[in-house]
Image (tube, rainbow, N blue to C red; front, side):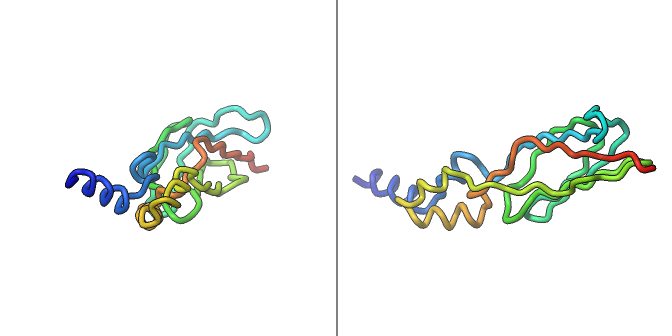
Length: 131
């Protein structure tokens, strides 16, 4: 009986999305030339996640692990002679959070950890050659 109570309390105090999908996520970033969609070389980018943490990217394409948070991913890329056409991509609701309807305190854990959201797994940044 004691173990059943312990399991029940653990379920109530933890967030389903936090446990099952975690508080960080891997995303793929690719920077392309807007004219022909070819990969650009010698590009440097900074990625800011929803918590305000910043990550540097020096290869293209790149894979980075970002923290989930309460805002969009913002990607700023630089390459001499080019300008970036798009700068930010939004985030999505993590459907695993719906399970917390049964254990509502778990939603609080998911909200604090940022696990109630998920970002798209792929980002393509277009850059245009300046004239």
